[in-house]
Every structure is written in C-alpha cells, then in structure tokens.
Amino acid sequence: MRINDSFGHQRGDEVLKELAGRLQNTIGKNEGTMAGRISGAEFVVLVDQIHDAAGAMTYASLLQGVLGNPIEATDPHITVSTSFGIAMSDNGYSTPEAMLEDATVALNQVKLSGKSQLAVFGVHMRERARRRVELELDLRTAIEKEQFCLHYQPKVVLSSGELTGFEALVRWNHPERGMISPAEFIPCAEESGLIIEIGAWTLREALRQLMEWRNAGLISNLVSMAVNISTKQFEKKDILTIVQHCLSEIHFPPDSLTLEVTESALIGNISHAKDTLTALSDLGIHIDMDDFGTGYSSLSYLHTLPFHSLKIDQSFIRNLEISHESRTIAQSIIHLGHSLNMAVIAEGIETEAQRDLLASFGCLFGQGYFYARPQTNEEVIAVLQQALALPREGVRFPLKP
Image 1 (cartoon, rainbow, N blue to C red):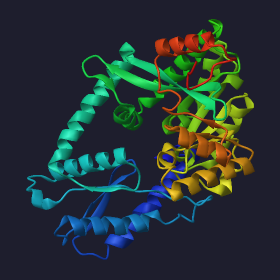
Image 2 (image 1 turned 180 degrees about the horizontal axis):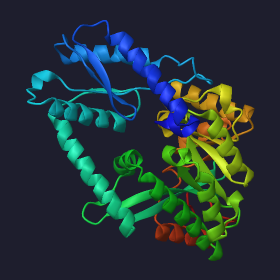
Image 3 (image 1 turned 90 degrees about the horizontal axis):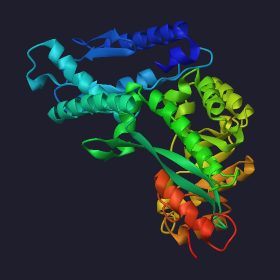
Image 4 (image 1 turned 120 degrees about the vertical axis):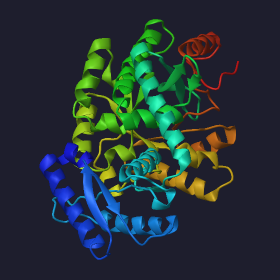
C-alpha cells in the first residue's frame, strides 16, 4: 500500500482500520454477507442474495463509493482507490479456496488495467494469468542475461527541426519471440517490481550512450537525453541516490539529463513528490511532466512543483487536424505551459500539418514519426553522420538535402 511508503506504517494501519469499519458498517445491514482482511491491503467480501454478474458489479461499485470517500481523521486527508475482482458461485466451485483463487485472478487482471476497476472472473483469465507468470519469469531472465536494448527518438525545435535531444525508450529483444512491445511487458514489470532494475539499467545505458555520441563528435554538448521514470521508481526513497550514482559513474553533466515523470507518479503524496523533484532539480536535472492531460493533474499543486516542461500526450496530437476538441486541449496546455514558465513538447507528431498547427499555437518543441521513429544506436549514428555531411549547420529533422 503506497500510504505505508508515503506516511509510515502507523498511518497505514489507521487507514486499514477505517476501511474495515466502513466495510463492516455497510455489509452489516445485509443478512448472509460478511467481510474479512486476507492480506496487506486486501479484503474479501462474501455476498449472499446476488444472482448475476450485473448485480455483483453494482454492489462492488457501491462499496467503491463508500471506501473512496476521503478519510478525514488523517492529516492530510487521504483518499484511497479500490479495485475488485469478482467470482460468482454459480461457476460450480467445490471449495472456498478455489472461488477465492479465481477472484484473485480477476483482481490481478484489474490491477494491470488501472486503478478503481471492477472485473468478473472468466475462464479466459486463467490463460492470461498463466501467460503473465511466464512473462514475469522471462523478464527475470531478460534482466539476468541483459536482453534489453534502447531505441532513441529525437526531440526537435518545431520551427527549424534542429535536434535538441533524444528520448530513450526501452525495448526487449526476446530470444524466441523477437522484439516484444513495451505495452506488453512494462505493465508486468511495474506490477512485479522488476521495473526498478530495468529502469536503473535504462538510465545508465542512456547516459553512457549519449556520452559516446558526444565523444565521437556526432552531437554537440547542447543535445540532451531524456529518460522515463516509472511510478515505482519514483516512489522509492533512494531514487535520488540512484540518479546521483549514475551521473557520477558516467561523468555525465546533470543539465544534459531530462527525467520524464507521469502525473500518476505524483498522486498519493504530493509532499514526497515535491521534495524528490526539487532535490533532482537542484542537481541541475531537467524535469518534464509526461503525458500531460491524461492523468490526475491539479492546478492547485502543478505550479508548486519544479517541472521545466509539459509534454502534450500524443492522443491529443493524433486528431489535431480533424478535432476541434483536440486543438482546444493542445492550445490550452500550451497556454498553461507559457503561464507557468514551462516549455511545451508535443509527442506523436506524424504530419507536416500537425507540426504547423502546433507551431502556430506557440509550441516550441516536438517529437514523432514526422521527424524520426525510435532508432537503434547504429541507426542513430548513421542518421547523425548523414546529417553532418549535409551543407547546413547542425543536425536538423526531417533529413533533407
């Protein structure tokens, strides 16, 4: 439970007692219904007189509302999110343990989808659970045998295409399945905690690679490297120590590193987030808020955090040419960034028209397939060599003679 990490175990115990009391007060009114804590922050609720999945979902939604109200006895007030995995007795269970096992499978599926979700167990979930266990085992092997690699996507000045930096994106080259999409393995890595090791490796490798390009004379000292920091990494209290160690080990200048943090990493303990971000910023590191507009950002705290840039999520860029709503959102984010003295970076630019619209809105920086796809080290070197051979100053995208 993140509350333990943020506020300590005593506060976590207080929250659990409050939630248990709310459950008891709610279900105590229904004959044949009972609840109990089974481990950590997990509770089991047995409900009688519900005859179909729709009724179970409705009841679980009711409990979510009861448990989701702010806990006013704590200072600051704490709000918890709850997820439910549901198993129906009409599946013919022979033991309570089998029913609980299937409810747990459903809950684990929910956790992979996001917070505050509900799911009713289906037989197909067993196969998903089996595949996930196999994936986690393969991930552990991948870490041990260093099967990961990085691809790099350029960041540019929209008005000129001038290269300002790269974003490092981790890829997994599985020996049997080939390249596995991050959309498949990152959620598993997050859930299992393996993202901590993967993230640390990604940071070291990205910094090492940029220094190698600099030393080869392929890029100027003004070109930076951006690395994504996962929620699990950000929650770790030693994240500052890990970053400092990587910088020292590789002799990497802090002002050439950008860390990208999603809004979801901030939720739960703004005080911890502010302290961590401020400490990183004080080192000279740039901090970007990634996927801005898709999470839970609040203007009440955004202006207090030391972000240098906001990144407009590509979901808003994709429909920029045809959607008035997407254009309005993009313009609003750009205006907000200017108001807070933050740069704005647009992700997922795929067409010249999108670039021109964003530039007309006042967006200064961008990245996307219009300029270049994420590339391997060898591909980046070839592109940089080609760019330096062109009769113009500096590296500019897209590459044109």
